[in-house]
Image (cartoon, rainbow, N blue to C red; front, side, top):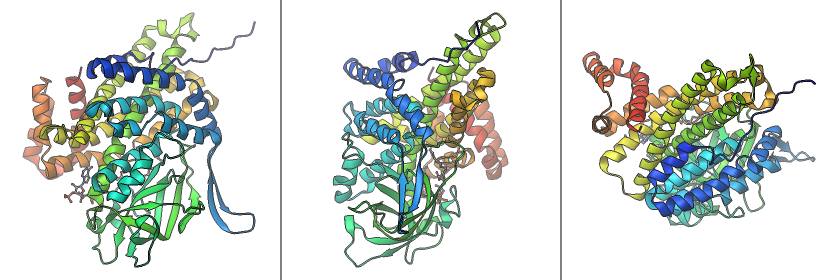
Amino acid sequence: MEFYQDAPELKNTFHSDPLLKTFLQSALAPEAFKQVSQHLEHLGQRAVTDLLQFSKEAEAQPPVHIPYDPWGRRVDDLKTSNAWKQLEIAAATEGIVATAYERKFGDQSRLYQMALLYLYHPSSAFFSCPLAMTDGAARAIELYGDAGLKQNAFRHLTSKDPAQFWTAGQWMTERTGGSDISGTTTTAEPSNEKLNFGATHLLRGTKWFTSATTSQMAMTLARPTGAVEGSRGLSLFYLELRDEKNTLRNIEIHRLKDKLGTKALPTAELSLKGTPAQLVGGMGDGVKKIASLFNVTRVYNSMCALGQMRRALDLAQSYSRKRKAFGKLLIDHPLHALTLSDLETEFAKCFRLCFFVAGLLGKEECGTASENEKLLLRALTPILKLYTAKKNIAICSEVLECFGGAGYIEDTGIPRLLRDAQVLAIWEGTTNVLSLDMLRAFQKENALPAVLEYLKKSNVDMTEINALLAEIQKKGAEFQEVSARKMAFLIAELVAASLV
Ligand code: MFK
């Protein structure tokens, strides 16, 4: 009889994740744990049944940009698959964003919501990306929005009703830069005319990356008339992309980006041609205000990396129990077993870090964080994001290898893990930009003492970090900058060790 290899198998991703269960059991009150675990059990089942199927279908039917109607009128329609729409419906009904704002379990609601995201992401074909921006926009509106935004947009962003649910885009990147946004050329001209949805300005400019351009609203940066050059002159704006007839509001879509991965996610390049927009939180401080948004999306980025690591490892673990080589299962080869066990150790470090930071975020949002916890959150957010993104790439690459040649073949689904992993190290800030953001937190907000105090209390071995800090003290600012990345990884390792 001919030999055919059995495929790896996925089981309910909540049941098959002892780390998640144990963590939540220790972090939540018994009644909260009971309710949360029931929901996660349900989502864990969907993650290996209908959602998994939708994610495969969405990947197989990527979005299409239709610039003109048959008669030559500019329409800029973005067609997405039915599966992509189903993933949005599931996100709304499962409350992947809403759970964080219902705050049913007070400051522990973020843990619940992030656990949902962690299970949802690997079977979402990156619908998690629009959700990240949706959550970030909800947070920015909570902090800076007026009553109108809170009653309207915020209510949609945090709805569990698919008919009411909105997603948001975050449009920062222009041709001049994604990391350095000081060269933003989009202008905002005040308008005396009565505009829709409380819009105050008309925006003109080009946005180079706008993910989830099918979203109903976006937060963006623009330079109001008369504002200074550089990032100091930028303000934060809210806009609704389409009018009642579903026509884009003076927005022209140039094209969809042909990306390395995240193929189901519509990411467009577009021009704003007098697009109505509402100033959020008053004039100026645009970067600072949009930071409230990207600090949330950075935690999402890490949770997505974590979910993806888990999925990759689940597949490799299953395969190692189905695939035989040299007369025995892969898992019975000590070297293969050790490789998997080392990857699990790396995953576990990321898991602890992710949920630690999610816990701090929940406390900050609910006003229960101490001053030191706020500083810890500020410093650890970029550190977590850069660390988990890199670990995910390394784990996905190694898992691909665990499948041998099959891991290199598209229709096994394994190569997509690696392609998609790569975006997480870029999206919402590269490793170096985030390392420098950690330094910004140390310098501008004096967050280093809070980090050191936390580490000291945790009794981790601080020899290496103390030596690095002493060297920086001696050699000065330039050396501090080139050491930023090393320091970020070192702190990530120490905090992870403190959480064992
Ligand atoms: C999922 C699929 C995706 C599909 C494909 C997408 C591909 C990728 C597309 C992209 O382009 S992703 C890239 C997105 N870009 C970013 O995430 C931005 C990265 N850059 C940074 O984070 C820079 O550090 C930053 C733009 C913030 C630097 O800007 P500035 O203006 O030079 O910073 P500055 O002057 O230090 O900070 C201005 C204010 O904001 C300061 O406050 P003050 O006015 O009170 O002094 C800062 O403290 C504050 N700030 C900056 N970063 C902050 C922050 N506050 C809190 N948290 C932060 N992280």
